[in-house]
Length: 194
Image 1 (cartoon, helix red, strand yellow):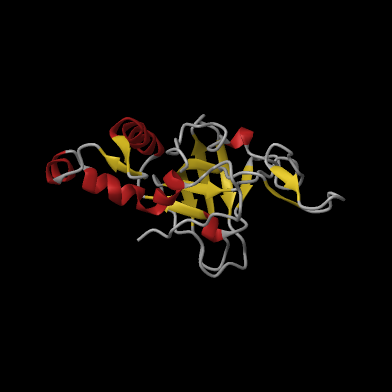
Image 2: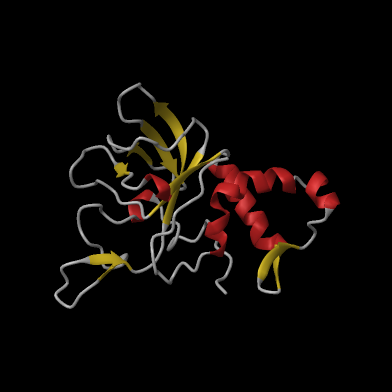
């Protein structure tokens, strides 16, 4: 069983500056699929988390959002023109972007291009609050019969310790906490916000 993911782990939850460039192959993130090294695929999973600081939703145009990562770096998120169902983001939300690639070489402004909408999700929580919740999970969870469980997740904790609210916040990314981050078999898709 994979260990519990930690959103502060820089290898699997990098800041913008540590994400690979979208247009070239970074061997820390990608490995060749064949001997001639013509095709590459990720050699592990990674996820960029950032808080939405501004959203521009203009009918008929691609959505653009200004984001800030854990290090305080500001960058923009470009959504594809031809995606009928774009990610629904609002100011103050945190976004989780699986396999984020930067567009550092072609633009003056730092950008992330969202190529696959199912690999991203909006979380109804600020990034500092999400990281604080992550820190609580790291100390409050234990493993029972191969499953991560709260040490005190009975009715009292559900009501008095805000476990109900925490579970609602984590629902879109709960699969990230069970993912084996070093073993890449296929792209991991995130759940839509419910």
